[in-house]
Length: 287
Image 1 (cartoon, helix red, strand yellow):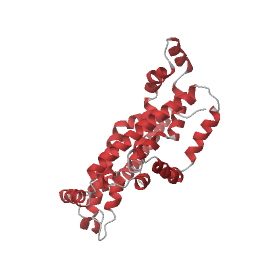
Image 2 (cartoon, one colour; image 1 turned 90 degrees about the vertical axis):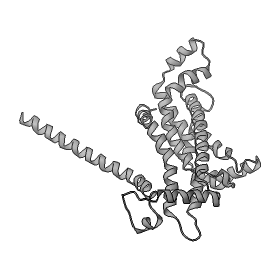
Image 3 (cartoon, helix red, strand yellow; image 1 turned 30 degrees about the vertical axis):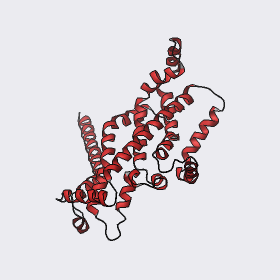
Image 4 (spheres, one colour; image 1 turned 135 degrees about the vertical axis):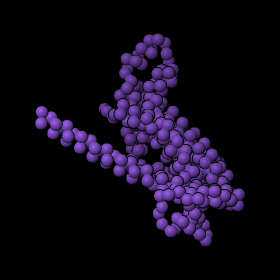
């Protein structure tokens, strides 16, 4: 009896320590976001005076200054949000569909050079995308696609890691017997993919969708290289321009712009976070 009580006490202490550790970890992860939103309500002078965890009273002033930048220097953060949302959503949807189609094919179909092509996919994952930006710029120039949103959307269709992940995920949750049963019922291969494959791949698609959306939303280098018109600038470019003042940087306005850029990501992540957990747990990689 004493041994059982000692064991229960030890387990309780371990559980408390785990919870305390998780709370501390959560605070460490969330604190930068909180400070960003707090600084969005403070003036540049207050921010320069030191760190504060209490909101300020300069939110309206920072918003007016940010709006003035949009009017005076054509750096409209709200237009940038719209551009970023359009580009990130389009590139993510294109990438997910192509990756799901390719991953499904690698998982359940045999075709010439299958192993070689999958090895190419794995090799592409290991190559930094920045290495091909010069060639991509020349390709866009040849097809007169510079300074267009297509220049940012099309690379989203070549998400090698999403192909690898969805191939592994499809192999873990879909049986060949299910596909064969659909064929017996008269379904074509594309019908099987759209009616059977895509619904079952939803958790994995949501998982990859979050990572792809965040990556496309935060993309700075590619828009910087291929976009020239202020009207087409995405949020990272506009924030970078706001931080290059000749005389001084208005940190309150800059933090407000960053806070506004974080809101769509936080909203999308909060909606789809349960799919990330489910997708990672159910889609454990296997060979």
